[in-house]
Length: 155
Image 1 (cartoon, rainbow, N blue to C red):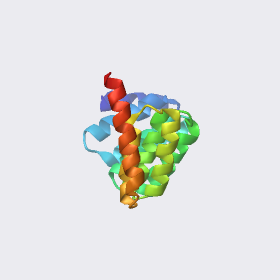
Image 2 (image 1 turned 45 degrees about the vertical axis):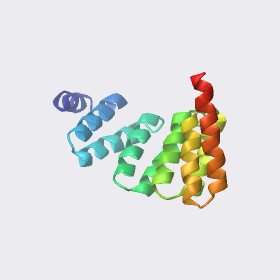
Image 3 (image 1 turned 90 degrees about the vertical axis):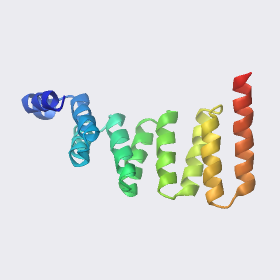
Image 4 (image 1 turned 90 degrees about the horizontal axis):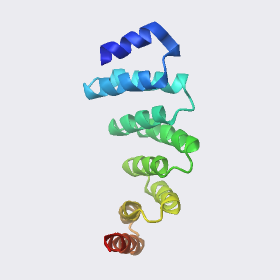
């Protein structure tokens, strides 16, 4: 796959579509060549700045590598491009949590709950962030809300 995608890129150059760059980056990532993966994600973002998929992949990879500022910057761009998409807000919230920015993560989980009020995982994740800040009463309230949602879904 890397060979085929590289050939397509060599033929089309910067006119190669965004999926070609992302696809090769994903293949590099799968073969533990994270430095090459990030280069392809960078290229996808540079050539297609309104494509949220490039920011998503790069944010996730930067977060895994503990490059939190870069991951947060990409997640901010992701949310800017996809403000009403719960997955975009959830991605940024998870990165903020991993970066130890619990207050900002709580804010994003609140935004996610507004978008998807029946997403029990959002309440559970926000509860974890509240606990990190020592706000145990708010954490308990969120955990109870998650339990109510889960029970309701099982009925």
